[in-house]
Image (cartoon, rainbow, N blue to C red):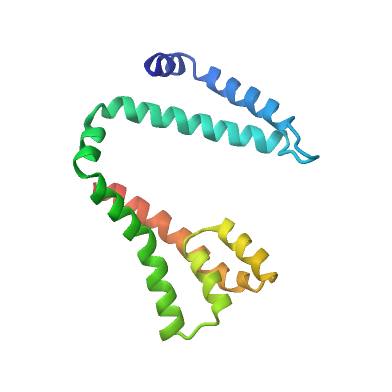
Length: 160
């Protein structure tokens, strides 16, 4: 089934574009309690989702059974490494900002969300704090993190 979809996508990629446009158009027409995403946002989301799913399918088909075997052998280690990699920068940044830099907690939370390039977290914190002061701490780390992510992505890819 997945191989047939990939074959069809390779034979006529314009079909995927049409499917994304059609799906986005119909999703954009859906309104719940008067709120809807609109056609433009829905087409963008549908195209990204479809493109990502096709990409994941192609990678999965190319990889075969190897990733499953690796995960079966070391799933706990992979999970633990993921937890450490996700939480260590936040914990170290919070401790560094609080104790060494003695930052205002509101600015520190803004800086941490900016450094993690997490706009959704900023919005949530602003809603909870009922203040936009967090944005002052968010801006510089956000810009810096985006530049570093771009540069390091290229460096890592070229190093491989």
